[in-house]
Length: 443
Image (cartoon, rainbow, N blue to C red; front, top):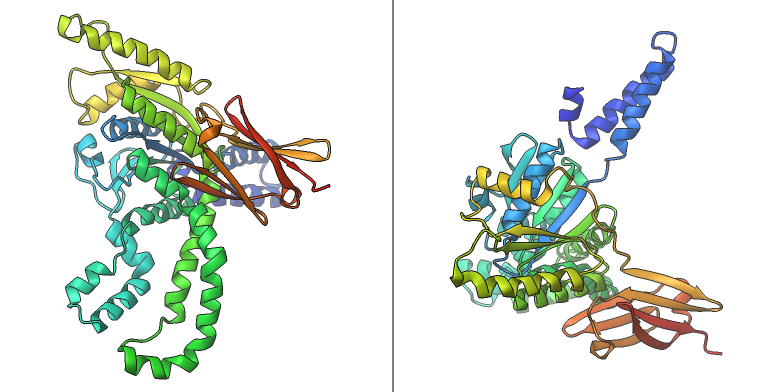
């Protein structure tokens, strides 16, 4: 049994299936109750087939890396094969574990691995053909080799490929739990919105342009290269962006599946931090990404009686109340301000015990319903969960089968279900933190 549990999830499934089938075909050798026991164990293992994904995010400096590391420790302690992956450009996961980490997962302790994303390695592996083509173009325009290679890496590409890494681990199924120590909320939200935004441009512009390019290349290339000094993009180069987009589409399905993926917001009892966390919660809901837990970190303990901290403690009491009220019905867990920094396994063990005690951090603590369609006679209501957002900040527009929802600089292009695509929006209102958009027939 210990050997079976040490295997990867996919290998366990295959092994158990083979045992069950073999037993079934040899009933004269293996007793029926043994087959039933093996089948029961196989089904139990199959129940954990899908990797659990937990994204830790919050304003920079709130302690999300320590919380991610402590969560990984508890998951490993419960027997889950766990990977804690830092996608924050300013890595500190290695400092938290107090050991060297690199791009490839490195074992921290039994059942626990850690890794810090090297975005350049991801970019070379997934975007190499495009990078080489852009380098060729820049060199043809007179730039030196090193300068051309540096400029061939487009701004933001390092962040984008953290999503590719996440998707690859999910597909491989090597781990039971994947914990993402993500970038601060602003960057994390841009990443989580990328599948939606990329889809809008790919559907409207890229695929038509790719088809035209493929048709004209054989005719134009002989004339183009002598004049420009470089070739038109090959099929490999043209295919790479769309293949990448297809990966993002699949990743979006993972991110928006609240049974497997959750965001955990780490915050501090401070006014600015709480406001950013509330906005992040609303924007995550806009992109249909569920939050299952809020973690209030660095609360001054009652044992601190120094008069210097009294005003700070009084303010924290007020903000603690606001956190519980404003994020309701999300569960909130509180972590005290420790007397030492959270660095090293011993410190993380204390944090882990305080945060989770005897509970399982891999569970979904709260399942948010961020998007729903309600039928009302012949009409429909599309309801989007946007906690804390007033209706005055929401802009709506519809084009064909897409509904555009914009809040500040965050926009979602929602492809409507077929039942709603043929109808016209007839009004909208905010009610119980849901933006309720009514759709009715033209008649």
